Image 1 (cartoon, rainbow, N blue to C red):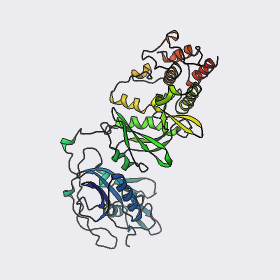
Image 2 (cartoon, rainbow, N blue to C red):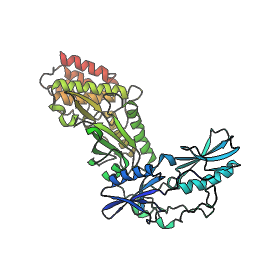
Image 3 (spheres, helix red, strand yellow):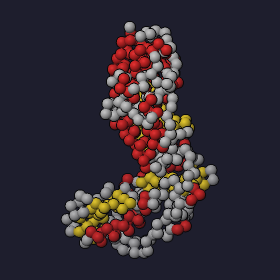
Image 4 (tube, one colour):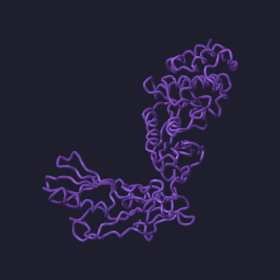
Amino acid sequence: MKPQVPRNPPLELIKQRSLWVVEEYRQGARNGRTFATHDTQMSALRYAKSKMEADTHPCIVRWDSPDSVGGLYWNPLFECLAVRRDSLVGGWTVVPERGTCAMTVADSREAAADRAKDLQRLYDFKHLRVYDGRDEEYEQRDHRFLRYEITRSGVRFDADAVTPDPDPTDETGVPDGPEERDDIADTDPSDVGKVGPASPGQLGASIPDVTKVEFTDTDGAVHRYSTPWAGGTHAQIITLSRKHAGDERVANTFEESFARWREADESPHVATIHESGTDPTSWVAYRVGSHTLADIGTDLPVRSRIEILGDIVSAAGTVGGASTPVCGLYPENVHLLEQGGSRRATVANWGIEWAVREAVGLGHDGPFVAPEQRGGTLAATTDVYQLGALAYWLLCGTAPPETPSPQASEMPRPTRNVSPSVRPVIARALVADPDERYDSVGAFYQKLLNAARS
């Protein structure tokens, strides 16, 4: 029985002088057939992904340097090889999970698993799953690239420590030559700690719809980038700093904050998530407008400022609640989308930056940060404080004081066409004690509307 899976080598993508080269991967020896050259990493990766699927190559190895691997991309057809009991043939079969033809059949589970290990190595399947007789539970063995985490920062890839691919010598396609050696050398100690922000090229190669990436803010624990997106729209990308990417606790903090956002991004006032991933570090790309509230907030008509506060209230009510405190209601996280003469605000980030900074031991400051946030906690009314700070800025024309509990009488007079009666309403939202604020952003906003109309 001959395997029905094409035996093509992986592809590799590596920079040579000023060009990015797409070629056959020959165990890192760099002597494979060259398919194409490109001026940029992004265009080379797009070509490689198309070729991988069209010509059935199992995966792509993307190099960041001659001895450092930056990314792995698998063909879905080579995602998993499965060992299962098949009553029709009276034995154990080895079948790609996205295929129907067995690559080999054995009398016992153990024999099938042994042959499957060789086939996984020979054909570069990402996972091998050996199921039990009920086809319910399984044991999983990952491709050697995954077992040795070759894309992790600091891991060096030793191209010279690899034996050639063995050739199959029987009709099962199973090689009888010596096993390949695992091809990862030890981490070079001189590389430990040498990390910087993810480059635009790395992000562009990891995010399929990106054509151009620009740095926006690469200080601190969370970095920001901007990029055009499909359909003439724009996107912002926030990433976990690569300095902290290896800390599982910090990465989990990023994911936990992101999960609340992801569950609510179908709301019209929650920023739409385009894509997310973990290569080269945890990231999320989301839709933005041409402006943020930080750009033009105090230039808008008063009515628009109040309407935007209402949009933020809607977003906060969707994402958070008494049992799920939220934060991140900062002017730069409020994006203004305009279409057909109408404007709506969407809110992004949702506390990712605050949570990550807290996890890595960085402080919190600024006029839109609630007192409890400075101390490392959130309260059910943290969003009330932050909305109050936004209202103070939008309606009084100046940033709120960083010292909490401002007296209403000490506030600047509201901007033109706003009643002075809004001052005590905003002052209550900004008290230091979370229990003394309004119970919710909705309750605060309703009071603010009533005062503004009086």
